[in-house]
Image: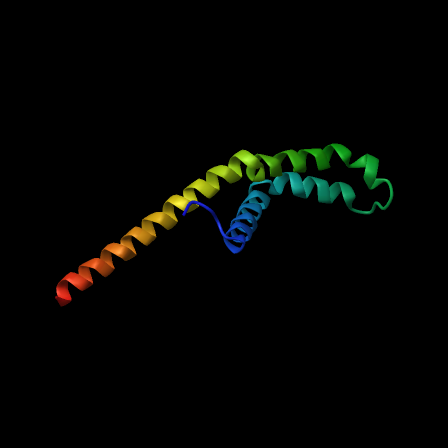
Length: 96
């Protein structure tokens, strides 16, 4: 089976987003500093910094990076399943 369940997809997305925030931390901090003490003017005063944050996040959470993460996850999941099946077969062989 090469599809992810909804729960697996959500878990992967949360994990990837958390990693992206760590990687993009300098941009996020710059944006937060820009927003500090502003209300309405944030929309135009910090627009460039927001675009940098968004570009950085897309670099890690966009369609291509997510597809790579999904593929790696599926590969790992298949390996784990294969190991379990092999262990089960070994145990059955020993019992007979």
